[in-house]
Length: 112
Length: 114
Image 1 (tube, each protein chain N blue to C red):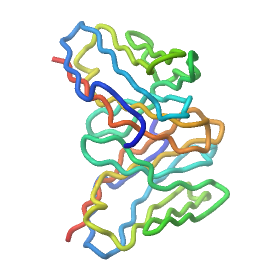
Image 2: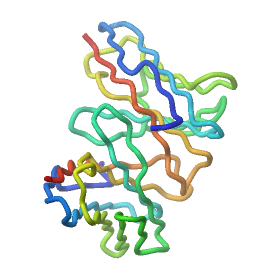
Image 3: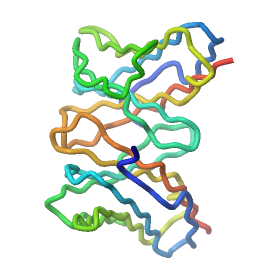
């Protein structure tokens, strides 16, 4: 039962361009969403989050957009840098929930 | 990943042995979560603990797996009589409170079963 889905296993983007990573969810009780970045042999690192009361949250080069009616969120990275190359996981939970539900990840490669 | 410490980083066990994975949360965090990541998959929730209490173990296999978070010391994930299918990366995360807070992850323990 995959409640959070990342349908693109990989994405390649030229340095300086925009990277757009997508995530869909099925559970309407989710009200807090996060993006994590993961390098090989390391744990996930928290990147940015958004509450369901917002539709956009921005932090430097990273912006997360939330479309509740479509149960869809996306992470925009602009401009993309080679150091952004990593696996990006989308996660969701409810404000009273104990667990985070993770997608299967999207491997981003930024080409210099 | 500053703060959450997991050890060992790599653990090799033979089938039938026991595996003990340890996790020390970030300072000031009293909520600990264990996740498992199988190859080519995302992280799957296993268990959520607070000091001396298991709050949610809905993701934990019913047999052979147990977890604790004692008053003193790290949280322990124990796997008894390991089988090949237990080979995975096990991640621990901590947070200062439940709900609406990002969880901070350790670098994981990679368990290999021979």
